[in-house]
Image 1 (cartoon, rainbow, N blue to C red):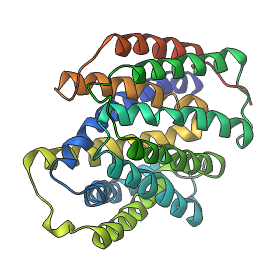
Image 2 (tube, rainbow, N blue to C red; image 1 turned 90 degrees about the vertical axis):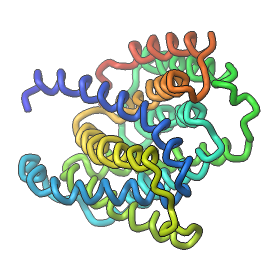
Image 3 (cartoon, rainbow, N blue to C red; image 1 turned 180 degrees about the vertical axis):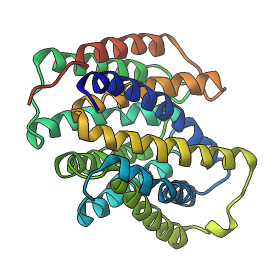
Image 4 (cartoon, rainbow, N blue to C red; image 1 turned 30 degrees about the horizontal axis):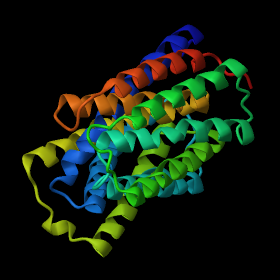
Length: 295
């Protein structure tokens, strides 16, 4: 891929990921209306990994990259898929979708920190200011009534904060040790590991064979598996090879606002002045941060 095409493709793919992942929070809530959390997460990654099995071989030939080391996709499955999403699904039984997305907004700060400490990235003062402005936007959204969820239970919200911490650890390892390897194989193998671990947890703590199959949760699961996982993580892992991790982490600044707005539009809460003010701050912060990071 030429440098010109790459410069055009990266922001377009990042925008696509923002749209997809901004909608997945509400889709998870739909699944949890009928399905137990660990079983729902396991089903999502099982369907996604099966889809990746069919497309991985031809995509890998086009990618022309060596396979990732076994330990890396094992850790990716443990951290990025089973660990992070297992926590998220359990907590989102109580935490509304928009609130969950807002709490996940600490992920960019974690990735910015790991980018400097582990990945050798240098972030300019203007970019640090952009991170601060975007995070202030998230805080502004959180200071509102969050769609009527002001009485949110503290314990599940605090537990949910572990999800981005686990994901940031896995993403940092993938960025550091997997940049020169096949993102397709890393994604496929990690999903298979994540689906297996979540299935073990589901059969240990729940009764997945008695799970309800309502049309809303079934369609939401398919959307999450095919678009919110197979397609989106395939794009994301490819971007990890070509773009700074701190820039990709900005996705987690945009998706909370989209999640809040989508939830309000579909009747899962409502918007208030804090939501719109926070949206403006997030957009301004993103504009300041999205510039080339020096190594």
